[in-house]
Image (cartoon, rainbow, N blue to C red; front, side):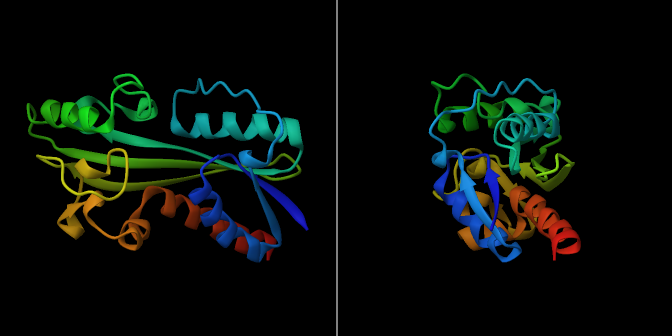
Length: 196
């Protein structure tokens, strides 16, 4: 059985990828399976570059197929910030309740409330060929923090078709429209075409 490495230590993500990739004959591995951590410096200027940096570092070391992603929130009124710095925005000591309120306060000074969740997913095949798939979901910054579900910036990301934030809908509803789900769908479509 071919092996594929998912560049994450998140057990939920591993389970999601396993469900999607096993039908293609892959045994899914993750960073949780490694004895030694692989040092990766994410110094790209875009989500796509960071996803590829991660995937290349792992592929170089293990010589197996790799999938990695980089994602975050881009706010129009903040010139695309926090963007690639979404996880590190305002420092890692501040919780998302503080970060979310800070973004609301900033956006309240502007007329444009538009925002996007963006996910770039890099796939490097065993032979080293590289592909990047990008999923985007369009929304707005809510006027207040709404919802207990989700994580990160979900409680301030208002999704117009649902008329509420992504933290205020079921996991299923969120996954149907999520940026990661959309990028993953493109990856699966590519695999169906080339690896069936």
